[in-house]
Image (cartoon, rainbow over all chains, first blue to last red; front, side, top):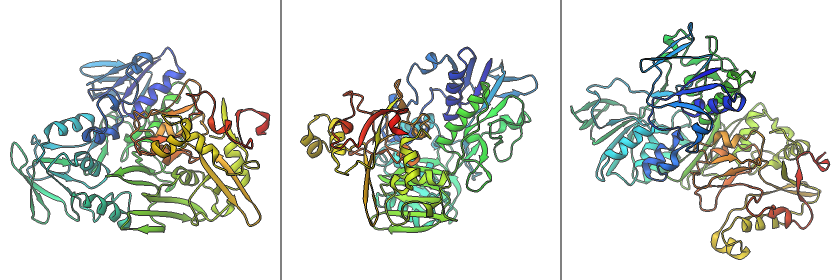
Amino acid sequence: MKYLIIGNGAAGLNAAQTIRSKDKEGKITIFSNENIEAYGRPLISYFLSGKVSFENIFYRDKDFYKKEKINLLLNTPAEKIDIKNKKVYAKGKEFEYDKLLIAAGSTPFVPETKNLKNQSNVFTFLTFDQSKKIKDAIKADSKVVIAGAGLIGLKAAEGLYGKVGKITVIDLADRVMASVLDKSAADIIENHVAQKGVEFILNTSVAAVEGDAQVEKVVLSNGKKLDCDIFIIAVGVRPHISIAKEAGIKTARAICVNEFMQTSAPDVYAAGDCVESLDLLSKENKILALWPNAVNQGETAGANMAGGKTLTPSSFAMNSISFFGMQLTSAGIIGGVDIFIDKNAGKLRRLNIANDNLIGFVLINDDQRAGIYTSLINDRVKLSEQEYDIKSKDIGLNFYAKEKRRTKIFGKED
Amino acid sequence: MKKVYAFENKCLGCGLCEVYCATAHSKSKDIIKAHKDEKVASAIFIEEIITPKSAFYFSLQCRHCKDPKCIKACISGAMYKDENGIVRNNKDKCVSCLSCVLVCPFGAIKKSADGKAVSKCDLCVETGFPACVENCPNEALKLLDENSEELK
């Protein structure tokens, strides 16, 4: 068997590992458009800050690829797929496959901006390479402008904090983390980060930039101009689907797959941030660009490519992130009732309950066993049939009624 | 594999398991130093079920799942299953993002005391026998094979 995998991230790598656990002899080749082995992508902000060294950024041990007999082709982006003749083209060569996985991830979205043209101090923040370039470019007095107050923009700000002169974050929305939080929860995060000295300019977008070789000023939609030494564009990402689309594989906003991670083309699978998959809560196909989801989908695709018949686990939005020491943990659908909120102390516990099910939660600096909440969402547990009112105290396994509790502790269900 | 099992009809909620867990995972292995100086977090959660008529307790630690969600959620590759099936955390690689806490269905992982990593049960792999089981005064914690008759 010849397996080809496009992408060396969480989905691609875990697919390769799963294939190898089931097929000891098959030939596995991974195409990577990056220049280093698989790393924890979210760690790039920790690398920027210096909290994680280059040696510790890697996702697997040094000898992983050799041990698992996986042929990793670095700096080798796959350019074209021929689904009829089952071939992939890269760097002028052709590679045959019996089974193919597209796990190409996403690419930073760079909006059309007046006078923006690859100036040398313009960066995105999605890869190790980009993180390293930013790290090499900054000086102690650099004025950094970050477009985008979402996860990537805020993590870039955190990574740069204390290493540069000034950080300004701009966002079109009225709040930070707009895709994950509503205004009241977002305000807690924003206040905390602003107190550290990061400036936020919200309800505002970037209209243009000034400067030719370098961006010297960032012009905002309100006409204001900001001095700029480093400009980071972090307004969002787009799934990398062009290679699939050009090959005639069915795509919508991302690559369409079934619950076995098969695409519309025979023997072609897709997984991770470049696919749309069923959201357990909304029952709609969504791009759930989450690390655990990519791992699950990669493992499922890998198992099926190696001859299995495995369904991918259900998924819904979830996040665990810290910003400048403030911990945000959330899952499911935004909204619900605040069990407590303390804007000054920066604490929040919000539970979203509907039809006797937990459907979402937001915890800020609330040291809870959040996985139990996540599990209650995932398993559609009837809240009224358990030991106590979920709103009345801290969550524990003691929330489950006796029989369920016993099976959980004694059983082998997980 | 063998895991630690909690029997709520025997547990007194005394908390000795937590004390000895923290001690076993300290550098000094000294009960006083572990708590006063090192401030080690135990890898145990003692839970109570209080009803108008009675109180029950149990002491919970990592279930060492067959297909652990924490490993899949781990962004740094710090969480792993060793050759004996024990789910372990490499503290050098852990960045304390708490993704594992977000997905553990048992809520069996917590932030370490210094906040730089997470604490979870490793079945006392270093010393050879779980300190919580060894020091439980009422046999409310037992190290049993997962197919043991006592669990049926």
